[in-house]
Amino acid sequence: MERNYSIDFIKFFATVFVVCIHVNPSHDDFFLGNQENVLDVIVDTFARFAVPFFFIVSGYLFMNKIQKHPKPSVYLKKYTWNISKLYACWFIFYLLFGVVLRLFQNHGTLAERKGAVADYLTSSITFKDIFYYGSDTSGFQLWYLIALIWAVVIVFLFQRWKKIGLLMLISTVLYVTGLFGQSYSLFFPLSFQTRDALFFGLFYTVLGAMFALYGKQILSVLNARPMIYLASFFVFSALEIAERYWLVNIQHSKPGDYFISTIFLSASLFLFVLSSPGLGKNSFFSKVGKNSVGIYVVHICILNETYRLLRSIDSSFFTNSVVAYVLIVPAVFWCSYYLYRGIQWTKGKLHVKPHKHSFTKLQHK
Figure 1: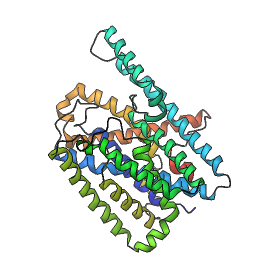
Figure 2: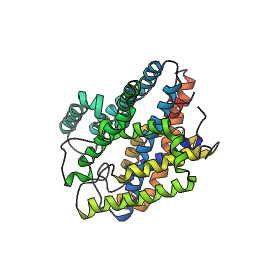
Figure 3: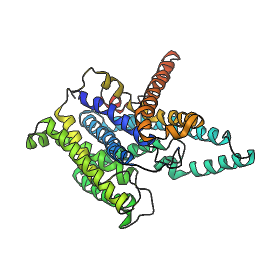
Figure 4: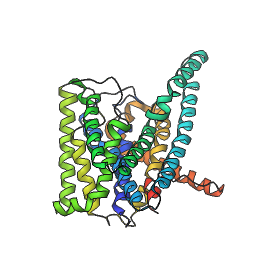
């Protein structure tokens, strides 16, 4: 398969916007929820293209690979094993990281801190969290890895049964159902988490697989210039911001992780990628983008420690949204990148085989 350089190029920006989502000072992960402003709404909502893009890329590359691999089941085992090792290592790291944070926090008696640790471990070490949700440790971002494992296994099975079209239909129904666990919960609330493998990740992974199978035909039928797809991405992103504003700020529903418009902006962005395969070739952005998953798994511990430091200096300044996005996002992003690269360098010196953290590397051989 001829390499599409624009994938790594766009992954750079997608990873930056993942950091933006978690840096958002109106979220309660680090600041107990500051008052949300217009900038927070725009940045947080626009950034929601990032994780769907990662799922689409993974589905696209995975399907391309198993279509050409002499033993698809062998490749599936290798692929899921690599991600499972990555997930297991960072799950353990963040589990212990959460213990340390609670045990050595600056408030509470020793008994209270030990109680907090016990509660944390009880909620984190459960079958459903370890093997499905993957989001109850301090490394809540790891849900993506376990969701991807489930999604690619399901895609593999349906492709083997030659029912990938049926899976596209099933995943669409699940996605629409999952919206009622998000901001559409004001119409029909669901009592369970729908930012997961079945209700979210599966749809975009299947969409990526469909692009692998029919992308050339789709581009031929549409016959549009790359800039048309890019413009469509921004138009649908604006609609997503409007959709979110109406649901959350006017109808007072809870903030969501994905929306109806997310489907169309994600498809538009990937059509742009397919129609611009040489974009970013040999660029600095593509070089960094190849390390997107490494940055993704590392950045939460960097962000946590960054905010612990900043709160001790002047939290009123650093909780300003402009400061957060202009200063803290780049700081966390680049610290995460260089820490990850340092980990890989150290592994090389110790002759430890590095994890293939980039999903592009997992599939481009």
